[in-house]
Image (cartoon, rainbow, N blue to C red; front, side):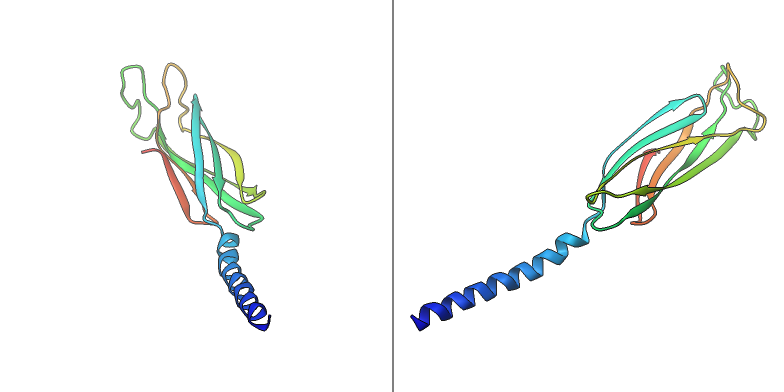
Length: 139
């Protein structure tokens, strides 16, 4: 009887030791983008992003940045200065280790880029500054 109790005690101790080693790793999380998608309308870029593996974080800081150009109907830049950078950021809540958010940025040109000129976005990146993650949306 004493031998059975000793073996049972050793097994239970080993089980608790194994659990103690694996539980903190699960709490730490493994931040990653689950999905990203974007749409453009005129000089506005809207990005929808979903992140997971954020552990016990309460919030993240998301940044949308890139460049855009103003192109005329002939496919040329009407003015050499008619290129611009854009950036916007937002603090997003995290629930159950996930963040699901939308960011919108508008490229502002001087002089303005108006029809029939078009605005192609020549680069765009979404970044989770809190976790150091980035996804290139438009190379």
